Image (cartoon, rainbow, N blue to C red; front, side):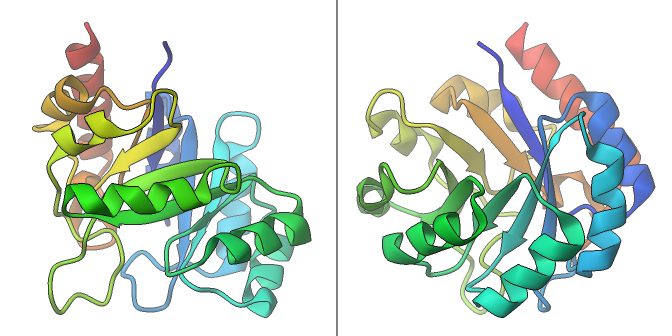
Length: 215
């Protein structure tokens, strides 16, 4: 079966092109001021134009209000929205109804019990994303370069559509695929030379590692 790969936190044409050339199914743009990957909606709109017809463009937000989401959708025209904060199932439903776009709901995981929250979003979110819980003191809900026990995901109901995120890189993605066999992957800090600085060679290396593992 095909494996979706999302390269998230893109800010430059070079990084975007490397993601698209590698075969990314999704490209993510982060709208969160505290993140080193933060991008302005207008700038994301320009990059999004280059991805049209080649990958799904995802706008990633954290507890954004309607006014901010309105501005992002108007300037960027995303294919999907990703909610990476404390959004409730009710909020996810509101966002879907307001914009008519599919929604990915990100959930933080550190132990088996954290996966129980996923059931509340069944039939509401179009897809889930499981990320590692942020380290103490981090102001970022994702992109922290930390992972969790991927074997926990084996307990998910069959057919759960999700992206595996958190601490992935070329060195460990093969192990992640072996242990969890996820339908999709999401990588951000694992293809960076510094926080928020995507590295074209690391992006290529990630795709090469995925291909080698799947062979």
